[in-house]
Amino acid sequence: MRSRHRSLIALFMTQESTAPSYLRRLGVWDAASIVIGGVIGAGIFRTPSTVAERTSAGWQVLLLWGIGGLLTLAGVLCYAELGARRPQAGGTYVYLREAFGKLPAFLFGWTMALINYPGSVAAVATTFADYFCAALGFPAGFIKPVAVGAIAFIVGINFFGIRAGAWVQNLFTVLKLAAIALLVVVGLILARGHLGGALAADPVHPASAGAFLGALLPVLFAYGGFHYLNDLAGEVREPQRTLPRALSLGMAGVVGSYLLVNFAYLAGLGHAGLAASSAPAADLLRNLMGPSGATLMAVGIACSTFGYCAIAIAGGARVLQTMGKDGMFFSAVGRIDRTSRAPQVALATLGAWAIVLTLSGSFGQLLDYTTVGEWLAHAFGIATLFWYRRHLAQEPSPYRVPFYPVLPLLFVGTVLGVIVVTSIHAPRDAGMSLLIIALGVPAFYGWRWLERQSNG
Image (tube, rainbow, N blue to C red; front, side, top):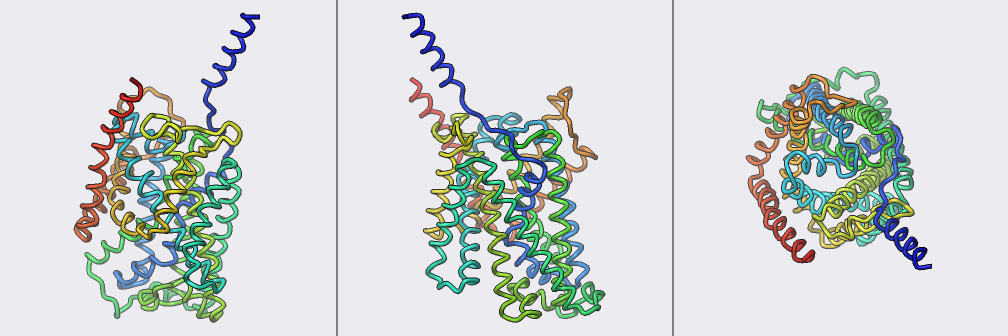
């Protein structure tokens, strides 16, 4: 009887010590949808105006979007190899931890998972609510409650696991691509056969070489977000094969969409009209369909921004969960639910913090203050590829980035250039971003001291 009791205790302890892990449930389309949804948010519906202001011809606008797409594809191919080498949740956090140690990994999590991710969710959820309320005719007082409700709804859906979250994401990816297709059709109709005018020079907006290079900044920002799939790599089926394919297909779809949309803006509004517009997507549809066109576009942008929030919450929660599992954050955050295999505590933590930022309205400054940190994270994340190639040269890798080391050097060099230009144009924001990163150093050592104290 006593031996049977011991056996039951041993069995119970074994079951308790075997922590649940993520299940690989995402296929190629799910993963590609995450790439598309993580990149295409609200930027493509507003940023083209800024790019047109800093250029002097339609062909320059398209050239910049093409250059930005090629540079981003270089980064995507690097992330494809990193994801294939380490197909687990956490993405850049995992690569930094293995290559450079726990402090750089913690600084990434400190800046991104605790500040940038929830700040992005708060900002984009507010944008979603703004367009949603505009489309339905709700007063401005409904914007914050709708934004909070959207965040809570997304967190609740993700509580049921990655499949439920992927279903929602796939739906909104299709809707945002439909909105882009509508823009392209309307632009071609408004051009009335004079498509060559889309590339023409605009004497009203002569641009210098410096302004032309400065126009690349908003383009690159609009291409950001491709790294979210790597945060979810622990739930991708056959990751060594699926991750490279999904990243490449998804990003190719984004580049194609961006080029087509910008051509539609130029064809329908002209270079001068695009540069003067504060809402080119709405203006394009309004020119053809009247006020109902602007309302329809508001629905499309609401769908696009909602889809982005779903990805940012899911990806950010996986980074938090990995930090908790490593002892770099509260241990409860590192748990994975046995039934849904979702990081429910991490999801609730990220969602709650995003809601606080939404209600306080402070997310705008947080995003400005972490822009440099975000791009530094991309640079250092891809720099880990050099460490893997040197220290694990014999490790089999199912996918290797082509033209190594040219592509990673090109991307890292471009990102560092973006950081320098950003620091020149916005020194206060860049300084605050570096200060936030620096504050992570005492936080790291303080957290480790608390961990040692709690463990005796």
